[in-house]
Image (cartoon, rainbow, N blue to C red):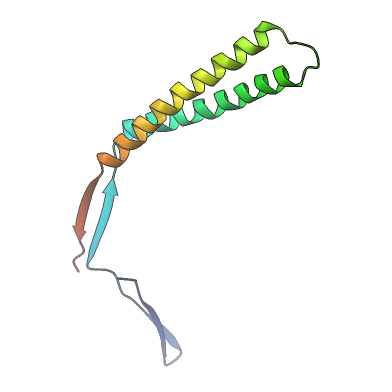
Length: 107
């Protein structure tokens, strides 16, 4: 139910009436799992941009590039895949362990 606000003017003194819902439902998630998800999400983002930078450097050289650039690009790409795997695991864990609390609003 949406809250309703009504303003009436009686003898130049405004009267404000606010309607509140009778029940509030709140979804709660596990804080540790959410924190882990956010950490792995940030690390995966940084690692992906690093991997793309190494791939760009490796592929943009006109001569055959050193093996170090290729090795770094492959390592950061694999590390990104592992981090995304952990990120998906914690995302599923956060969404599977939600609990709902219901609060009854009284006068």
